[in-house]
Length: 44
Image (cartoon, rainbow, N blue to C red; front, top):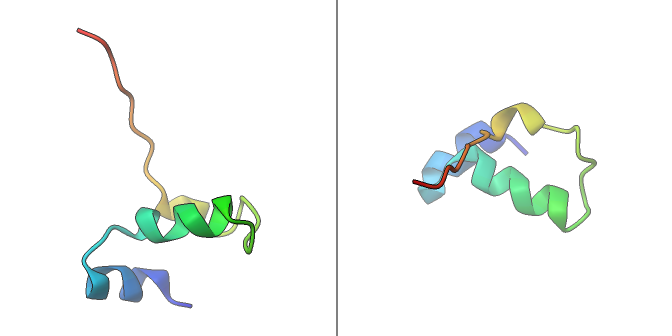
């Protein structure tokens, strides 16, 4: 699956596609992990 082509077609970030594939188990955690973006949430 070419996630980088699929994700824009359905209007989401590639990381949104990869996340469930990792969490639901079909893919190991290292596969396409580069497509996920880390965010930092801070309290004000």
